[in-house]
Image (cartoon, rainbow, N blue to C red; front, top):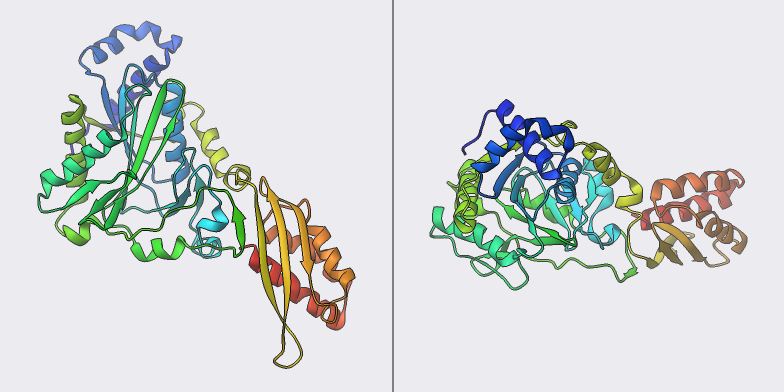
Length: 385
């Protein structure tokens, strides 16, 4: 893939983005920036040096907010270390296996666009097409990808669907899409599975909390495949080159791929704070649409007997608004199940927070009652994912 030297790239990118923002502090260097743009044809291809999901999502938002996309189209290429990314209007407890993700150290991110949940790793290429709202055309963007694949591997049977996925051999999904439209600008991003860990993908994209009732956008399960499964000689750099060349051909650009670093605050002022916001609980979990949980909790009884309790919760903005626990009176006094429900109201819907809230309650009991109360507390924490 053609790439400028790092110093030259960052110099050009700083001037480019500053000019597009209309930054006055660069007015003295207008001659050099105008010379740069006089040889430009309206297209830029940027490749992120970062593999941090929050930095790359913040980079998307930064470009959309700061670049005049009426004057310039941009293709951003990026990939992440293992991460799960949910859509703007999704419920993470319904979409992904949060306990397994925590044990594996895999972060969860909520993007600002809609669509379904995806698993990212270094074998997955993300492409973001930035343009004006008027020029927004997702099918044309996907055509860049399918035409690039057909050109370098004519034997691959790939096409875009009405759902804006790209499928291989008519059945295997290799790409999914989502988008965001603002008043004058837009971006459309899609995945492309080159050599992703499909085992991890299947493991992480499973519900972690039973009995959820919600109007949140659900993901649509699909059979997936990697390009490498069907084109074993397809190298990563070859794929990137093909996409860049096809982007230029489709839109009549002559852009060269330039490396950018989202961690460079001089080039992208404010991006680090935007990434920090995306990392936060309030955005990741607190933006979940209102939902309820109705599930049964299995409680051991004497000998081989098993009792069952019913847990009902209402959650808004990630916070428990109502909690009701119906436990058999002969298993636990109603007073205790009522106190347990009470300590959860106003807490985040979070197993760690619930466990902490239960601590003081458990200290007030002893003997068999304490053991049974702890069993119930553990069951509630597990049900919360």
